[in-house]
Image (cartoon, rainbow, N blue to C red):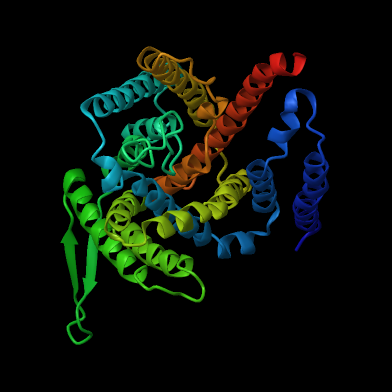
Length: 418
């Protein structure tokens, strides 16, 4: 290793270590002006910074040896978070989906797609068509702008009676993952290659057809994955819990799906719907899935940072694409979710005759599922396009977190003054 490489590596190792006392200092109550230090000291942002530093400072031979790891991890996380999102469509809750809810959320999805398409097309006209934006980017950005919380949301605004049910029925999360899955299959041409017995030394190639046929195959694969999950979760007692068994099934099935060009997000969503509707241990499964989100909250930003840091020293970044991605998310997501929250609040006010609680600024923040959706795009994107997409999502995540914190601090000021 040369002296510049040793220097880069030392900086890359020291920077994550320097973030530890900063995090400890913030946890002791030093929130800074408007509480912004809580944003800059969040675990996801620090993980992204550490990943970027390590990706930038790692030697070439280390970066080359670890090249498949981020994509493999993104595939696993996509299957896991798809599983969590699919669990929100439990049959016991889906039966409560009314025509008004479905039409409202479908209209919200259409509005998001149209808004993103208009902004992306406008960016192409201004910056030229060399940014590589197409159907994949439109659907991927639309799913990121549309997606809210992926775990099932409890009905905070209703009573605790048996008729109210556990959760608010919603199709937003599975609908957003379906859009992300269509984005992947629309730009891929999956082919299954089977090697015949060694004596013949021949390959059998199976074309899997167009986007619709690919989605049908992926739905079938998701059903098989859900059946396997149902079988491994039937035991009354497991010494290590069910997390390892479920994670193993998701890892294998998501990896096979990615090899065939399918979207692990959609396979996980179908498997989640199947398993949570069929299993006799529904609450145990939901608890495991929710606790399992602790890994993606740190791993997804770290992997995204690693890809961005590595791209800075190799193929580089498409900076116009980075600014377009972050700009589209920052414009569309707050507007859509704020308008929907205001509409639902007004509807609840008219229907219940009481004033509902204030809107939670958390609705405009981006969770790690957005980074997983972007990372799963590595199945079809080039080595330069993927880090640009990830960096755009990271920038949008940071800016929207700052906006949400300012909103939250402003809404708390009157209470503090009183």
